[in-house]
Image 1: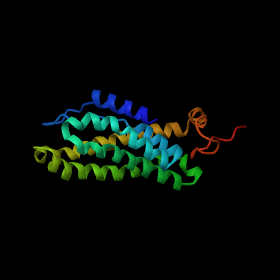
Image 2: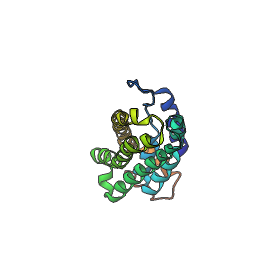
Image 3: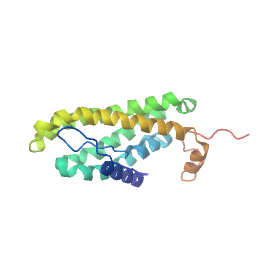
Length: 188
């Protein structure tokens, strides 16, 4: 799943540049799809690990613009996997299968990464990137809007997967019985 996250991140960043006045580094990044799926279905451990690895590809893609401080990209993704996974694990099994609960878990779980993103653009980029004090603070808002948009799409995708029995059967093939946080429906 981490490899899929890197692939989705690199492809979406390469193809999904968003026209932003004065800057070119705003791009769609769907590397969080497998992170959210792992966190919702397996909890914080695998969500965090997937996030840490899946953030490497997008970090490399943006390293030419901001240099070594892009190391925070995988950290932010890991924090999102951790937060969503903690929320998913703390819920009762029947609540984990409700659409609005899954969406709320994804949105609330993204808040720590959003705060880190804001801090990154407001404080770190101006400090470590030559000329960054001119463009970075203004870039934080479009990047965060884009991030919330992505997480909304990912949330709806995850809701669809939570309700898909075939996907849960597929996931069960890779883990010991009873390890999925979203159980299969009882068969008649």
